[in-house]
Amino acid sequence: MKRGPGTARPRLTRTASSLVALALGAAATGTGPATADAASPSFPSSSYAFARGAKAVEGAQSSSGAKRLTPGETYRGTLGAAGDAGGTRYYRVDLDAKDNAYVSFTAVPPPGAAVSYGDGIKVHIQDRDGNDCSTADAVFGATESPRPISAAAQRPVDPGSGNCQTPGAYYAVVERVSGGGGSGSGGGTWDLELHYATEPVLKGDPPGAPPDDSTPASPAPPHGGHGERRGGAGFGSARGLTEGGWQDHISPGQTLFYRVPVNWGRRMSVGAELGSAPGADDAGYVASALVVSVYNPVRGLVDDAVAPYSGSQRTAAPKPLPTVAYANRFSSDARLASVRFAGWYYVVVNLASDVRDRVGDGPFGLTLDVTLDGSSQEGPGYAGTPAPADEFTVTSADEREARAGGAKAPGGTAAGGSPRDARSMRLLAAGAFGLGVLLMATLGLWTLLARRRARRLAAAAPAADTGGQPVAGAPGGYGYPPAYGSQEGGGDGHTSGVYGAGGGQEGQGGYRGW
Image (cartoon, rainbow, N blue to C red; front, side, top):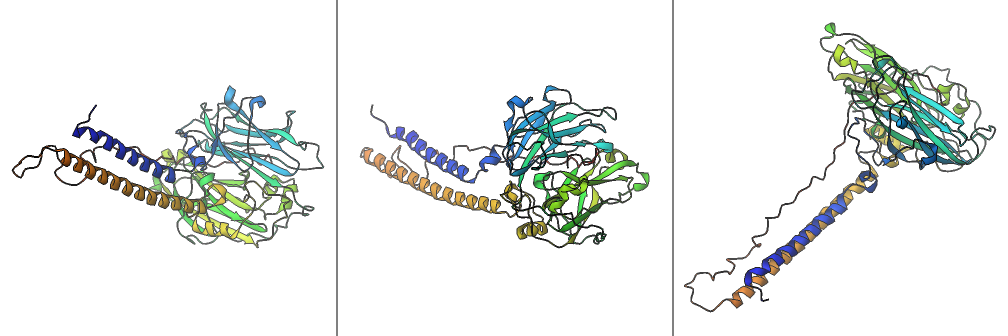
């Protein structure tokens, strides 16, 4: 069939549209999120900022179906109510005789969930005969405020022990526990963040006795030493701190996460002051309002402190930490044993949700005082590589990140100005440049085709005296075909994360598990 002059336009439009779509698709491919981040599921019920790139894993209700975890990785999952089928979850970890293993679980109840004093989690690493290599627990305690709580279990390499030393499959187990009573033990599903780290044994013999900490720690530095530093909303977004005083603010029910690089041979002290509230004369009293918790690099609890609040300034400060030393792990004192490796130590600050009803909505001023004593020393000679590789060391880059207030990101880099982000910006720039080149080529081709079509139409038009008027059906000038600009694009390339409430751990049940 012979085509009329107007039948070529759909082909031209389709050709140009395809090229534009190709250009936009290429740009989207070049500037989109990394694969690991894109695979992370969304948990809209959670107010906790989960680690970037955390992989989704559903824990099994039996050891038979447990999925294997990879050392150095962080995962996301869920945990059902105590007593329910999903209230206990199993994960498989394959262990050898060369690496100490640590698996932490951070449980995140939804905002507003009802929790009581003894509600929380209990974690284990078990062998194939159901024997516990270690256990640890975390509960909400007297604050009875829903917030993230964390506990870590371990499998140490100890040739002198017959417990859990055979290479092979082991199971990391988390179970929901309920203490009953209080304001009510809530049901419902909680979100989970899992972190699995391994630490190699030493090349030679381990050091002897732990260092002597009989010398008092240095006093807290004066307030305002380094200005403002906004806390993160999870372990994965904890903001770096160095020695000095740091200003922030906090609202009832909120949890803020910070991290401090503490090297071998150094000793950290930290405290938090909650500022006075306007109109404090009419405020009520909250017995367990401010909780300050310190966690080691594998998210095991070291110590915590609690302070009441009635509108006047109050301070919560755990005792100064022991000096970081490898030999600490051999102590029967669980608090000393938890400070067994260098790395990022986490400071987690929570303000109980009851403060809103009895004192006010806030936000309230918060000042963190950080002191570091001692001198950095060379670490022990590991016989292998930890996972993550930078988990148990402090580098000059770490100290720079802490001074700059970098937030933690996968691979041990700061979330602001990290190599990962620099690569993303380079990809973004390259994608934008490529998009521009491709669009210019597309539009040039479009114009060329339009001009050729105009010449064909002019050549095919009948010879007649038009009186100087344009020939009907011929283009009135140059430019883009009428279809240009009529196509509608769309799609929001942004995703939103949820930040806000949560909490530290009051440490009820002590330091079991270390």
